[in-house]
Amino acid sequence: MKIRKPRLKSLYDKLMIPISAMVILSLTLGGAAAYYSYYQQFVRASVQMNSAILSQTATNLEEINNHLSKVAASLAFGGPALRNSLTTTLDKPLDEWKARYILEQQLKNLSIGLIDYEITILGINGLEVTSENGGIPDNGSIAIHSPLFSQALKTGRVCYTAFAKGYTYSTKDAAVIAGCLALKDNAGKPYAGVFISFREADFRRFYEDLSSPYNTIQVISQNGVIFSGSYGRNIGVSRPDLLAAARRQENGENGAVHFEKETAVLSTYCVSTDSYLLAEMNLPVLLGELHHAQRVVLFLWLLIYLSLIVVLAKVIKRVLSPLHHLSDHMQSSAGPPTPVDETAVTELSPLLASYNHMVQNTSDYLDRLAEKNEKIRRYEQDLLQMQINPHFLYNTLGSVKHLIIQNEKDLAIQSMDSLVELLRSTLHCGQTFIPVEKEIENIRYYANIIEPRYGYQVVLKIHAEPETFSCEIPNLLLQPLVENAFFHGFQNSKRGKILLFLTMDKQKGDCLHCEIIDNGDGIEPELFRRIMNDSAPRKSSTRIGIRNIKERLELLYPGKSSFHITNEYGYGLSVEMIFPAHPDGGGQQLQREDPALPS
Image 1 (cartoon, helix red, strand yellow):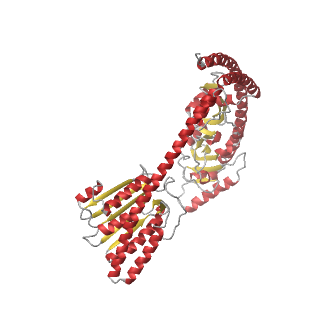
Image 2 (cartoon, rainbow, N blue to C red):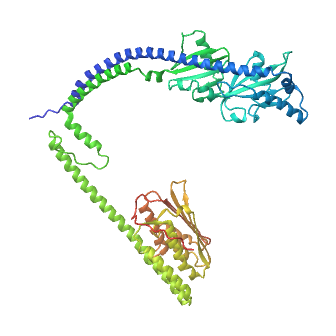
Image 3 (cartoon, rainbow, N blue to C red):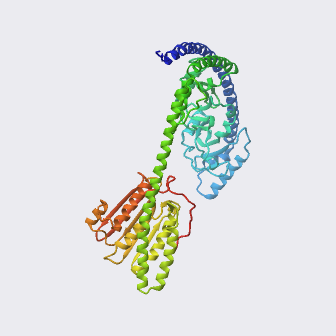
């Protein structure tokens, strides 16, 4: 009997295409009509609301201007004493003090308005007085010949501009709105300027609570400079584009609102300050704030769409449920495959049983392979460690024997004590990795054993950055290199230094940089070549030590370490190693000890 294969793709197409086409067509037509209706409704409501905000803000601005104009005018009629104080040449300190006193008395009698303000008077004689008695750190913005003063002189009224930072000590770190009235004598000649400033943030509070994410309020001058704006942005910045939009809207172009791409601009003109108040409406954000009725309509459309999707999903699920179950299970396995529940699906039980059998066999094989690799890795590390310890004991005991022969009893006892501490720390340590601080301590013990043998003519110096102490390093990694330097580096010279440097290498990541340098004999070029090519005599301790360290680095940090030797025959040897400062879970991380470094 010929088994007919299910035509899954054809069945899916027959179910999905008609329903999807119906859903897309219905939602497109209905959504377009709803969107147009909501668009018109919300733009109209937003325009009305922003018109009210601009009207109220303009009223507040006019009240502030009227009060400040009265204050400036009261100074203009301050009498001959005030005019003389601002025009008379101040050659003597007493004259300046008298003139300043007269101006300060005038400023004390000023009335309080809707907003806190400061007054600065600048005379043509160079006298400057501020109501805060603190002076002005930078009068370049409000000098007698500044553009603001020239505009006030030309118009004969208070003119305004804005500065991103104030010009008085109390406002030097805040944006301010500054007004200026030019004082003129009877002949029309200017003799002083009255500069009135107030914080932009104090004026912004009149409308800031009425701003929202979809509308921002801006106040700009006839020159396009922003006086004030929502969130205090761009104060004192020129925006000719906003000025052009305000003027086009004022002239009646495009109706009550001027549209530019995704922004609608509504403006009103304030006569008393000769400035524009603008409301910028962000249409995409505005349309996101839909009315409750709009949400209801969208909810109904969404409900219809979801209903159709549910019907479609149920039909497809009944037909393709067994394959979906198997496919989802196979895709959800991020690591090795896992068995699938055979009781959940009955139609494909034979196939699921075969799949589970394959998964079980694969899992068993991977477990055996991982266990085998871990055993091999431990055996290799133990073998390398076993190669180090006998050679190390041979050399250290030989040094102690040498001291006894030389009848250096005290040094021999000291060396034996260091040897005991070293054996306790290394041979009985079950750790693959130890702190750098512990490795340095072991090397100190070793140096205490070896240095007396050379009569302290060959000494070890260790330079380690404190931040390296907590780093993890393979146990007995540095000791064989120090041992080679002592026993093979000074056979001819008999004196010198061995330097050990431990630093952090941030350029290559969080790595530890170890370098051991001696100024001893070095290695003959031919022997060095054979050592590096691993062709030196197998019993060569230098060859064993270098090969041992290289192999340990490759085992513990595969692909993440470097090992380099520089040989200068007759001048010494340098060994450089770079490897991660903290192993990625390698080795046996037993409880660590942090003894103090020996002196």
